[in-house]
Image (cartoon, rainbow, N blue to C red; front, side, top):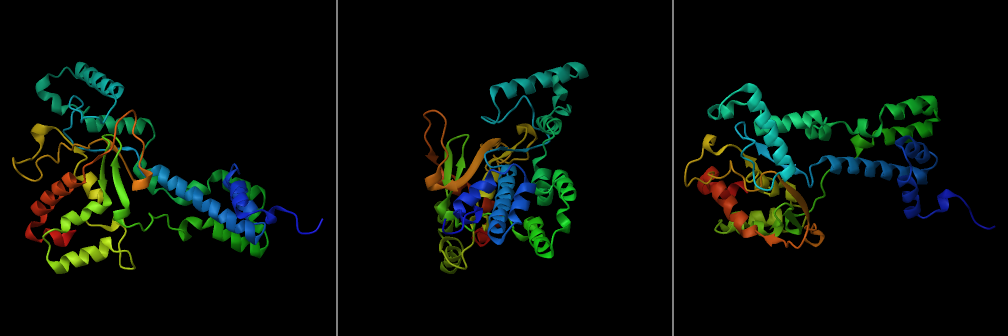
Length: 321
């Protein structure tokens, strides 16, 4: 037969599928070392593994809550926990009350506050998302099993050209930063999956109203105008992260330092405490369960954030957007 026959003749899409079906990282590395073409496909596969690990550990769709020291199991935020979870927490609390023989007046002194309960549950599940997220990508890809196979196969003693390529693969976590895409905020939407509410990224210009013309032009150039000087959505001083942070705190009402009429009055009783969130483009809207429909709360949220920013920064609040 005329022409070459072999794995190198396969289309790039098929090669990518071959690597995706390999069961372990050692196989990805060794296959990637066989030739330049497969090296590129293998390198891309390792990058995909890194991205998969990063996004699986980054709280997308997870419940997020900032729990105060005085938050009580008997006073849970709405929609944050299932009925089964709420019942389990209250039973644990009642059990502790019975053991300690304390009365209701000292309820806030129990170690079994909401914060203590959640920390204990996370520890018992060996779940610490912060430490997991910050763990070395080297440990994720190249674990003890990989290095055992590398020693047994004498991988490190391969010819110099292969060693050079091997080093590139081994240092993929250092050479390829796993960062969020440089997408301007107007193309994105913050979705509260729990309540079915969303905040549009193109609603941030509502905060520019009333700004001096020079400052408004600066903000529009930084955030709203595509180009080399445009900043990604996560680089905003007031962005989706600050919106969530203003609504995800929860503590016991009587112990909160809140003054009536103050812009911060309800921050300690966040209406989105314990809810699930996702940031996506408008055409990739998450599906809601049942017959619920999405509700746009962009204007309401921007008005709330404006009040908070004014309280914090005074008349110069728009300099901090």
